Image 1 (cartoon, rainbow, N blue to C red):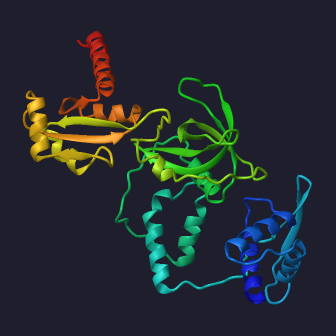
Image 2 (cartoon, rainbow, N blue to C red):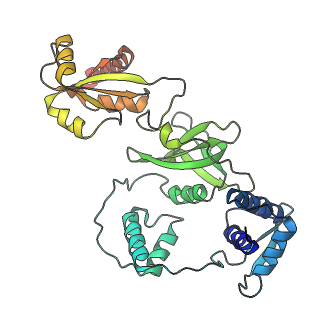
Length: 344
């Protein structure tokens, strides 16, 4: 491949790293990461001396980049003096501008959050005028620690390891963990941080309202997630995954009052409604359940599943497996006992 294309590719990767304010790169880091990307792009590796010459070249005509050298933990690091500087400039087309404006307006639910100030600046820079929203997402304005959303978004997008200080509902004593953040997930109007523990790589989740403090640790090497987290949540409802439990086939009946609601808003992605011969078979098996409809889902049992099934009250009855039926029965019995004590 031509040398000039190789050089342009190196400049592109160096430009990204020199403007990065979330990591500290010395010349060894810049060389290593640049070579990783060159190899992925089908180019040969280059020497550290080559990268040094590239950086020096960026400081002169035609780029005139202001580059600063500074020390962190004994390492001589390198970066652009102005983090917004780039040697590559491209004007947005009208179509691109309009698309970005629509996206920004759609994600406007994050307005006012710490670390999302750039969103407002971006809107101003693109000339976005205030206008009524035409899409509204479910949002909890009283969510504790919602200001952490911006901080965690920033750390995830820039692949920065963090130290979490947190507490549980049952134990108010603060705990600490070195954490590799991967994903922010919303469930039931609460936000959860999904990531891996630094010591053993185990995937964990933390509710934002249980997090007391977040400290960035850019000096710790970030370990990217080696699995598709979307697949991890395919077999569960909510965010709690018990890796020692298997997927269960759960059969349940729903009354006429709720069957259309459940049919159009599935409890889980695997939901199936039985009709024709299978429906007739279940009606012979459960003669007391007239009308209504029979459904099934395939997922791993957890707290969120039981709570979701219980939320329909008498309109939904779990028929199998017996383990989940027992969990719901015991919860209902406990509720009845509690109400029996306080009922006037």
